Length: 264
Image (cartoon, rainbow, N blue to C red):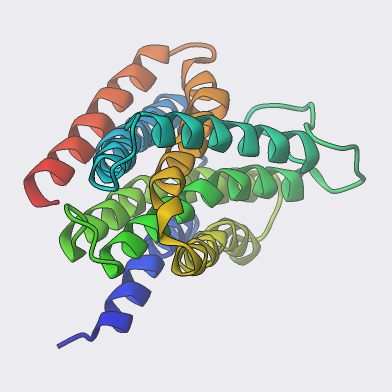
């Protein structure tokens, strides 16, 4: 029987495990992922993140604000959401990174290798995912209504599911760029290590002051939506086979919605 701390530790590590398993595909697949499959997987990740932002973060943020007696129950969700978007916009402007299928680096100028900046790009959008898991586990720890072990685990598993294809999308291009299979695997896996770290930091913040929980729930949602709009959807819709990205969004959204409603 797992104790409380073990459950939280496992929950925080599950998304990282998903990324690691996906990155391990570099040992099993000989060629790079086909454009059709890549767009399908990018769309799928987008759908999961949008559904998780609504059902696991924004709705609980509004419900908790109501229980706290906040006059305008939408205020914490609105403020937190915009703050999350602004935070990722700031990181996007400062951290040197390179998006998939792009030769133009973003962020401050640097002499980093393209492969390193590509890993930074994925690491950047893993931060809000780790925060999302951490904030829901923190709510569970504080006994917030509608936040249970089941709901926290559902979010963690949902993000891990979309991290699996993301891990492969990272490691396979690194391999195609000339990296050894082990280095490509390590690059993909390490991009996900930021998730449990972000989760722990979020939990510690909420331990200091519980009233900010509705804001942090929406903050994580805003940060995740930023990643979807800024990176995942454009990459899924760029060039041919954009319909595969659309199909992926539908599948990912429905899967995460069903998991959250049925099990959470």
